[in-house]
Image (cartoon, rainbow, N blue to C red; front, side):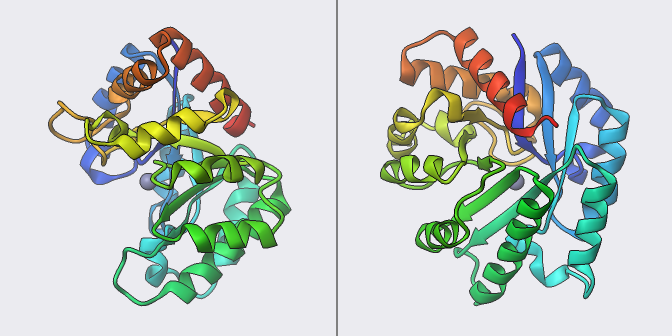
Length: 254
Ligand SMILES: [Zn+2]
């Protein structure tokens, strides 16, 4: 079985300190491609180092909405420079998170727009984080005429009714360990709305530990998300892994 983890943070100290074992377990589990998502200027170097060390790792660079206060004055120039230096890289993790209580929604929006436009200019796919800002996200995607070069909404938590619209904007829909929680009826209903060619899976390691696991989450655990999907869709694990692997390669492998 070949698996594509379409969103993880291997640079996070919680797993990077034991990365050799984490990567061994991933490879034993069949995870042969991973999108390692940067979150601020401070972790881009580590993302580069990991992607150069492990062939299965695709780097992404961006400023996560939680960390916009840490950005330096020249962050956008730096982002363009690092993306140009790594033509295989995507743009992420970027987005909007209106669950944070910092009152910085306007600033988040402006940092997100700059990164979306840079991704379009350089023709790079995006990895988008969105929490409680679905109206703002769809308004923005409408104004920007979608994401022509593709990308994903990571760990999808929006309404099932929104899936088609997001797909029409050029995005794929990625499901995480939250789908393994028994009470997650909304996630399961969303999954049923996703076109097979737009379906992705991810661990968001080291966070979003799937149900029944302990410790830090890691890419090897992605099989539990495959199983959650196959049981909702009534198909085999092999089919889910093949579809999501091929979709991941199409969206993110340059
Ligand atoms: Zn993430």
